Image (tube, rainbow, N blue to C red; front, side, top):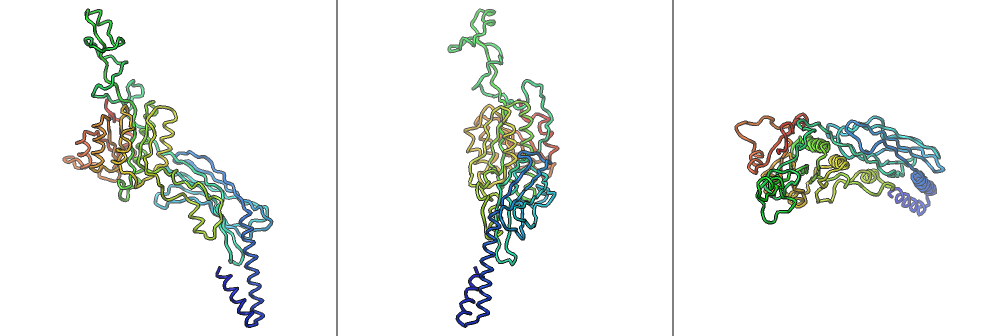
Length: 440
């Protein structure tokens, strides 16, 4: 705009002062501005691009092979074209993606010509990664006009969390780890007879113990054992306030790995399984439009190419506790996408979902920090009749605290009669259930 304004002012001044050479120069400059502007718009408007990527659900260590092809459908040759396949990178060590091959290229593209960009990305950690869109930049040879265009829809890859095999499970057991006998007799299991008693008014005819009745001459009824709890509801705390300090990323990954390992083992045992977390689902930050737009600045184009930085979601992520082959993949993919957030605190999460948690399943709370409010909220769950176990991820802290004094968080949980387990690294995850995490 400044070029146009300056040229017009000089043209008017030259005509007023009858400076023929200046007027001629301004006519030439204005002509160059008009032609270069027209050509730049033509170049950027006649480009198209396609992307091919391998895989959508991968594991840590797998590689994504990406090929981006851009074609010029116009009648003019592009003198220069800058291409960049925008991949959001995190520079916090260690890197989450390791690239091999260029994601950026500068080329001259002839009319009806094409250019390919090939690169490979190795997935170092779990996560939800966006590959693309393609950012194209071109302009005239004088540098007077530049145009930017965001092209091709992005490709999203889910990298599942690491799974550590757990020791201590008896796969052949008829009542594997995860079942907790209810201490009160609100429910009884009619398949498990515990004895006989004298008949009471109101007993069903199906409850009558005919052998005891025939042997004693008095009407007897069967006595059943209390029903047992089967399955687990994983309660993952992912509030960023509970992951302070430089070990935030490592501790959060340790908590997710613990949750994934428990889910995997329980799924193999064919037990009901569910997940509740106050974290943010990275899929909520996906942009649904803007993949084929033109911009006049590189900053505006790059700002549009990435995922949104925030999400308006304030409700918990909840996967219903049930049994089935689709349950484990759904939970693992959710754990792959979960991110720390400043939304619901853990006590607020429990208050939000306590009415929807099934009472037949053990509640396993996966925590990184245990303030007094969290311990009290878990105690409230236990007083409501739930079987509750707390697993605390304590990365980068003293592994062997003073034996004479429990940590405050452990004292608070034990005061609420909550069974406590602790994981310090991936090796300790494997031994988490060696002494039976959930008692019978």
